[in-house]
Image (cartoon, rainbow, N blue to C red; front, side, top):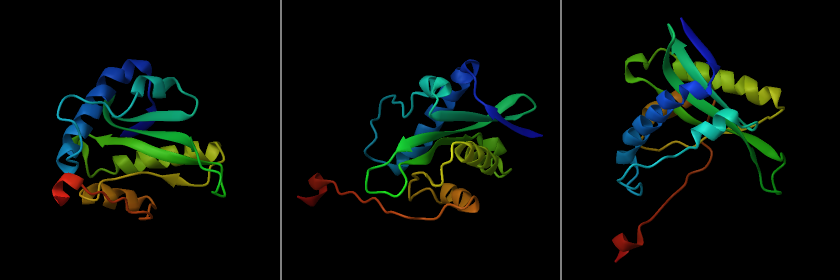
Length: 155
C-alpha cells in the first residue's frame, strides 16, 4: 500500500539523496549544469516553511518518492496574485509506473486548494518525455516554451 504524508526533518537524509539522484538524471538534459556537486533546493528549509509543503510517498514504511508544492507570488499583471508550483518530483526507479507521482501531485493539489490557489505550474525538461507524460496524466498541459542559445556556439 502506498501512502503519501508530509515530510519530517528526520526524512532529510533520504530526501537529500533523492535530490542528488534527480540531478544525476537531469544532467544529460542540461549542459548548463555545473559538473561538481550541486543542489537545486533547500529541502530542510522547505520542510518547515509555511509556504511550502514537502511530501513523501511510502511503501511499507520505506520512502520511495517525493515532491513539493510551493506558493509563489506572481507579477502584478496576472489576474491571480499567487500560484502553486510543483517541484522535486522523484520516484525510486524500482517503483516507477505504480502511479506514485500522480498520488504525490494529487496530494499537493489538495494542499493548494486548501490555500485557495487556482493555478499550479511546474517546469520540466523537454528531453524528459516520461515526466511530461506523467504530468499530463494529472491535468498539466504545455503552456510556455523556454528557449536558449549558447553564444559561443554562434561564432
